[in-house]
Length: 148
Image 1 (spheres, rainbow, N blue to C red):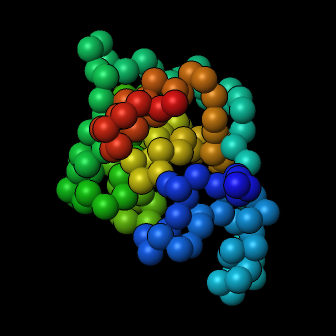
Image 2: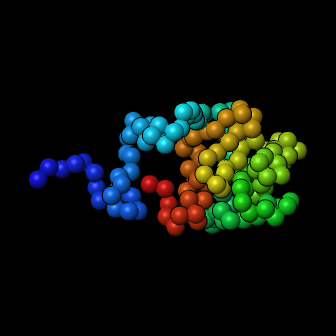
Image 3: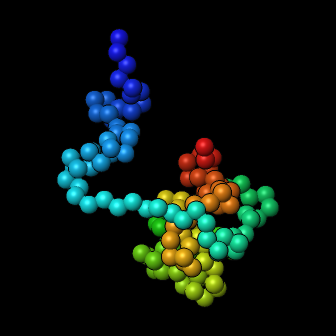
């Protein structure tokens, strides 16, 4: 019996479609869906603002990814400041995290939507080992398990 290289958990909801696993399969799938433009995000692996990231408060193992914005109460697209750990909404809601960054000079924040980290000082996404505790605590709350 030939092995297709695909496991059973890669089938779609109908059981007949297989999920793309490689970058090429994803590109072919998206092109088949009519997507004509694609963009890649390449996060920085270091920035000078990493030194401002504060450790999670003692005893904190989970970050509440459903916490509302401190200014407007929005719960749809919020970020946590990685300097003071306050929660504000994104630039696409009411810009309260942007304003917090400007007013307080706190440049590093973590998205509760996709668990990405943004540096306002570098105007770029960032991926660094120092960010793993916060990302893990948010992942634990959002998905019920820590990062792998």
